[in-house]
Length: 400
Image (cartoon, rainbow, N blue to C red; front, side):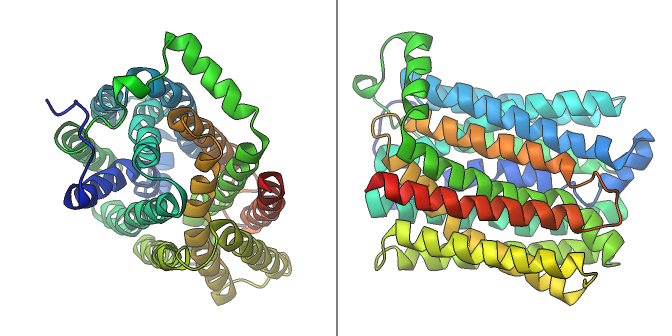
């Protein structure tokens, strides 16, 4: 049976990591691909930009809660069955969004879609922690991040084409197809990596206890907050970029998709470079330098935007921010997971909860000043990245 334990060999591990990358890519695909169609959705439902952005918020909240529940439960029940069930529900929910009669229904369905999509994301991280530790884990998480980062390259380009030639519903038909691919990966490729002997006994009580222990581990929380705040920086950009690049900078929907894809390519470049650097430098040192660089870039970018200077300087600002992210996310999650050995699911769950709650928090805030200003985006990016520097420094101090 595919769900029985089968630790992967070298060749199988490559296939496994690619499959885990596909499963982890659900979040950027489910968010980035319909960014260019957001103005069309607002017109279709005769609603505001903030209401449409709430479909991002509820997806992020659903993703956060889903990870927080499913991660520790997978420490008790195992990884495989939960992943399969979640991917099946994601497929069905994607079809339901297409048929939704109102923006309110879309908002509600996106929450369910987030919960179901969380299975692949949280369990993929737990699987990596099951099969690797230390620098090897940092490298695998970076490889996973680089594979996942291809989604923000493909998704906005495809989304821009869809926004140009088809109604917004076409995006969710494509997501339904991706849900089918995820289901195939979870059934045919990803094995059970947590044998019964290593599972925590005690049912849901044990799952809750594991989460509580993880939450009370200061060094873990510091690195998890670094990851979450960096994601807050990323999602401040993601949620506002469609309006900023099109309405403020004057780009078309297709040109916006190209800009978004180039910036995603910067994140891939950073992640791939990081896989080489972790062989020579400690992940904590790389993380500290990367978050400091990211904060510096975003503070300078904020000053320029507040001063009324936009255009190519804004594009460079966003590109450099994404480049820094390639060095931050893989190291931050590997360092956090290393602080809670034996509780990979619970650790991944808490990290995911913080990550997507942060994403859900910043998303509507970027639209408070309307569709024709980049200031809220820049403020949130600078604020989140500056706080991430403090969290990374605290994590290194607490680990020592």
